[in-house]
Image 1 (tube, helix red, strand yellow):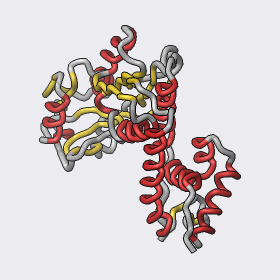
Image 2 (cartoon, rainbow, N blue to C red):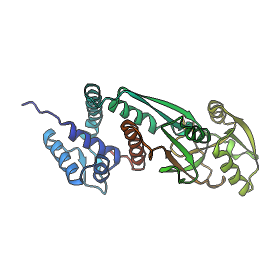
Image 3 (cartoon, one colour):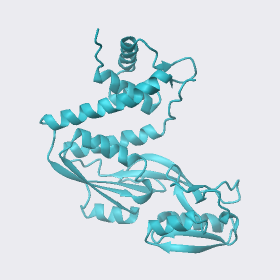
Image 4 (cartoon, one colour):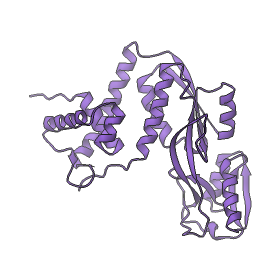
Length: 293
């Protein structure tokens, strides 16, 4: 007998995997915890296999659950794309989104993919710049939404995530041991002042190896082990790593990712884009589900 999978139950399963638990998945889906649990139970009964290992302190994916997850993501995405293209919910329009260079990945590509499935006829104009320029352009009305990296929440913006700053150098590099410490920063990067203030407070001599407008120049210099820079945790590119300085470099403050424009939504699809950004950053704060052995 042919068995048919239900998109609603698959969506709940994917949400549990992405958020790390039933409670947060329920909040993400605007459902009750019992409703999500029931959908997971129904899915397991349909497939006649356990998808989640509930024997430990947290929830883990079983090998069968891990296998299902990749298929479930594709099926949910295809469903949303088809519905968006064939129903009157597919808007015509565009939205201007500004994001600082250093936090475009890993969250924004996921957000844009999900948004495109919801609104395939809405064009997102993504501009990557620095916080200072983005805020200035936003004040002039050039963006619907912007994200910023700032040392604290602001009255004008909405704090949606918080991440520590870290010293970053070449993978396996040693330049961080050199004194004066050589640094590489953008000309108007807000991390530059925080880093130099921390170094001076710790009485560590430093010198600027690179001050540039080019992120590529900074990346090349750091990857070549010619200087260190400062980044938000989780945004370190390939070929670089968080410096294992064991206290030989000073601690750095946390940074807030703030969103501007979420409180002055004029179009439904912009509101939904703001919601996707909030949800995606909330999900990054949860540990990924382990695969049960």
